[in-house]
Amino acid sequence: MWTSGGVVDLNPSGFTGSSALATDGAQQVGNGAPHGGANHALLWMGSASSVIDLHPAGENESSAWGVGGGQQVGYGGNVGSRHALLWTGSAQSVVNLHPSGFYETVALAVAAGRQVGWGVTIESQFAAAHNTENGSPRALLWNGTANSVVDLHVFLPAGFTWSRANGIDASGNIIGIAGNALRTNHAILWVRQ
Image 1 (tube, rainbow, N blue to C red):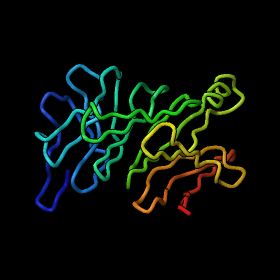
Image 2: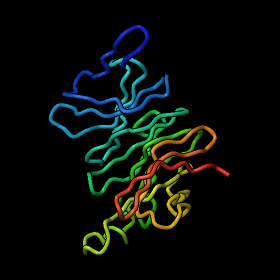
Image 3: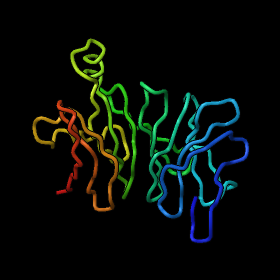
Image 4: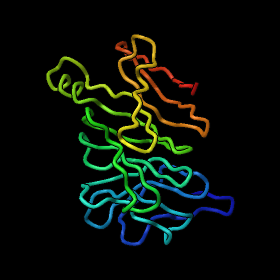
């Protein structure tokens, strides 16, 4: 972590490596690999010794990608079968945001109690396996529970085949990316009404 006072090495004791992926100024999140293991979602408060292992029991791997307002977001599971997770400072606080009807989900950012990311539907994944579609992700918004999910992709103009929500501000405005079959990507802003 780079600060006005210099560089802080956040790699915690007992981990062969780590990555910091987001900060809100007070907390930092990312992941790290304990000796001989898969990545665990991690939370720091400015020092290696402050680390909190957010890895939920029963998960193969986890990673935290966003932090804000005392919440942390990311995913658990394995690549190809990840599910979006929400924490409030401990492994025991984990909330599974993965809604029914989705094969894979990942949460990337959080602000003011709202979480954003992406998901691939079961239908889309089935189509991809049968070479009829590309298993395209769809931008998603949550309000703290799996049942609160909103598919942001439906608000895009026709022609976009995939989308991903990468960030959200305190007012609920969301930024992300969407693409079409011609492989043209567009920066997207979803404005809260």
